[in-house]
Length: 155
Image (cartoon, rainbow, N blue to C red; front, side):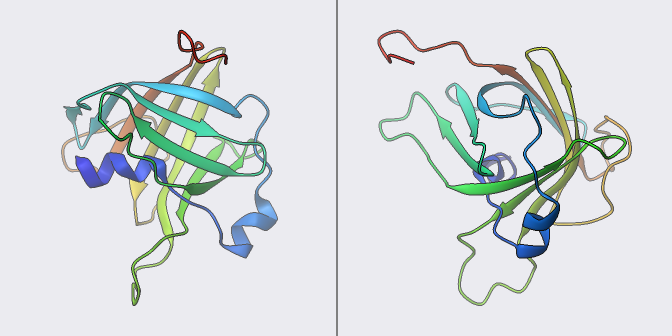
């Protein structure tokens, strides 16, 4: 669960992905993780998890409730013109000597108002074709809601 979800705080930096990457309208902003189902089982965080997506393809993940929020800078690429729209998370801080590629997630997404659903596989193809997470599917399903400003945060 930890590595799978901490993925969330991931990365994009691959030139090939940058070429097709144009962050989709509506994805930019701060999102609160409502639920995660990994391989058919519900997963959770010890505190409120938030993902921030920026217009330049940046992605960060923080779990509130820790003395020091866990932040891992990453990048993302989204293609809203695909059917279904695609979402890839790419790590920029891979360990030295890592040879497993740099895509942390390969997935699809659906944006409906203030609800964002992402179905993804970690580190591997094929890209999911449906929004599901069954026991042996290798797929995870994450539901997020657009964040409301935190009290006293000024945002």
